[in-house]
Image (cartoon, rainbow, N blue to C red; front, side, top):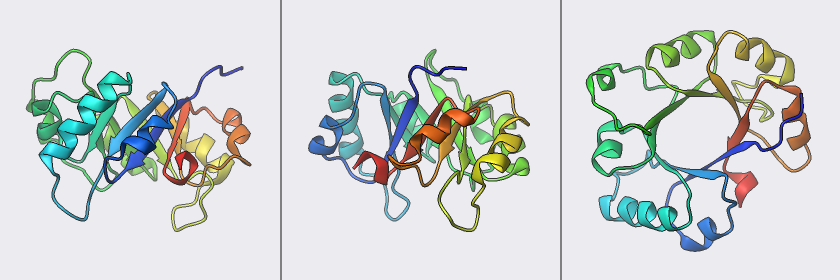
Length: 175
């Protein structure tokens, strides 16, 4: 199967116009900042700037704020196992995405009604390193779209076509 365009997701911790200007149109921004509280003015500036560039913006781990600021969606990290957002009213094109490291977390993300699951870590050699074979096995347990996450570089990007992934996410690849 030939994949024409991969979806791209770039994790950022702060809004910098110069970084966003370097991104392609099919790149979406996931704004995450687990170290300190979100600055609403910064998120609004990011949203407005990305709308001009036709880039989607997702906010990590705060669905209510994503809805209130009229963002494109929200990202649920693997440690977020809450179901309280299921009572919220979403606008038509609001999208929930989330990450998982194992089968248990995949099933939780499906129950949380995410549309895409970021499966981690494909190449990065850390505690939850999967590799191509385990990645493909785990991705077959879900009918949701799967996004590769972790350790993607210019050297191994072609290997993503060996997976069921429809895109990839990262930090260092986009810098």
